[in-house]
Length: 163
Image 1: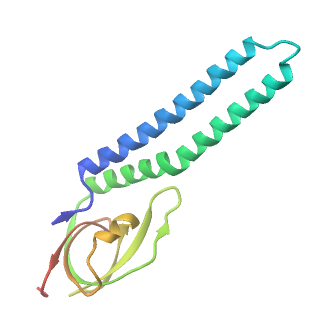
Image 2: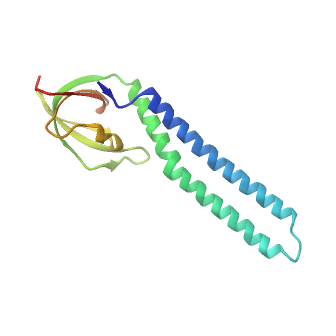
Image 3: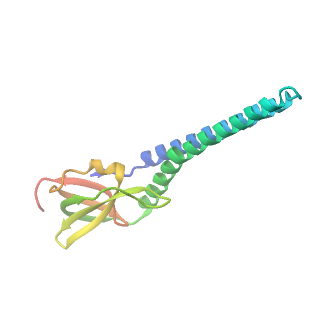
């Protein structure tokens, strides 16, 4: 079976999140040090320009830190927490035909997922998969053996015929 969530992937996401956090902290710390050094150089002749430099440095560093947090840290942290939660859950096996994959949607303060409809012998079931991992699934109409946890697909295997 092709595993979607692995320990290596969780560790990679955690490392990426901690690297982004360290970068943002280092950037803000460096901005603070530069501004302290500028404050020691102030006199009546250059006070206005050093004030503008200090404001500019803090503004630029703050915006870069916000962008790093929003685009790198938060998504990686959410994916790692989501995957860890699923790895601890009890799993269930299903087999059926992949019918359709919906457009992606974002769960607030969490991950972006897609809904997947699978036709099993017990009827249609709707499961979820991370949006960026939905490309791993075969084309609609394929028969799959699926392992799920909390109605998320965590592993699948393509079957060439209906079992």
